[in-house]
Amino acid sequence: MGLIWFLLLALGLVAAAMGGDIGGFTSGAIDGAASAITLAIGLAGMLALWMGVLRVAEEAGLTRHLAALVRPVMCRLFPDVPRDHPAMSAMVLNVAANMLGLGNAATPFGLKAMEELQTLNPRRDTATDSMILFLVINASSVQLVPATVVALRTAGGAADPTSVVGPTLLATAVSTTVGVVAAKLLARARLFRAPAQAGLEG
Image (cartoon, rainbow, N blue to C red; front, side, top):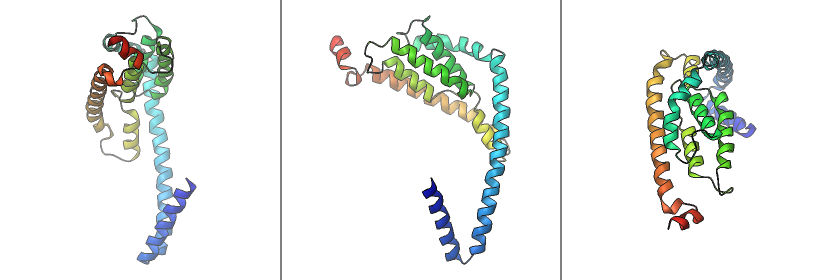
C-alpha cells in the first residue's frame, strides 16, 4: 500500500512538473485529502443511519416475515436438504438478511448454514451441489435495500441517491437467476460430478 501511495504521489509530482505547476500539485493534494475526510465522515453517518433503520426492521420481525416468504422457494431449490434441518433455517435467514442489506447479520447465518450443510455431505473433502448453490445465491443475493450504495451516493452528493434501488433489484434478480440456473445445469453435467457419484449413476 505504501508503494502505491508513493507511486501516485511521484506520478502526480512528475505530471505537475511537466505542466509547470508544482504549486498546483501541493494544493491539489491538500484539497484531495480534505475531500476524502469529508466523504468518509459523511459516509459513516449515512451508513450508521441506514444500518440503524434496518436493524430496527430486523428487531421488528421483518427478517422473519421475509424468511417465511423465502422458505418455500428455498425448499424447492434444495430438495436434498430436509425442510426441518437446521441448514435450511440458517440458509433462509441468511438469504432474508442479505435481501435487506444486513450483511453483518447475514454472515453468521451463512457460516452456520455451511456448517450444517457439511453434516449432510457424504464426501467431507468435496462441496455438495447444495453447498455450491447456496454460495452462488449468497454471492449474487437479490438486494431489496442496497443500503451501502445508497449511503455512498448520498455521501457523494448525488441528486437522487435512491434511484439505484430499482436497477439494483433488477440486476441482482437477473444475476441470481442466472447463477441458480447455471449451478443447476452444471450439477447435472457428468463432467462436474464427483467421481464416486458419477460412477453410481453411470
